[in-house]
Image (cartoon, rainbow, N blue to C red; front, side, top):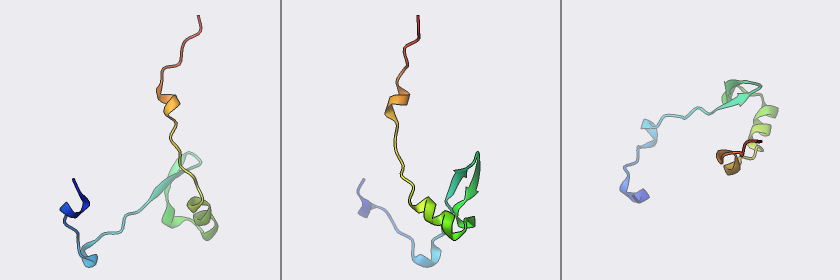
Amino acid sequence: MRHDDHDTLPDDERQRCEVWTRVMGYHRPVSSFNLGKRGEHAERRFFAEPAAARAVPRAA
């Protein structure tokens, strides 16, 4: 489906999406971070680890 096939909401009907992240074993909203922690969050790099999905051979 192409992007232009979707309806879009006017700005006054849109709702802000709150982003949460895992910090030290629990989840917190990014909006509660101080300025330094927000900068650190913005610099994070995300990656996928496809090798972890493969079966690991067992030792005999």
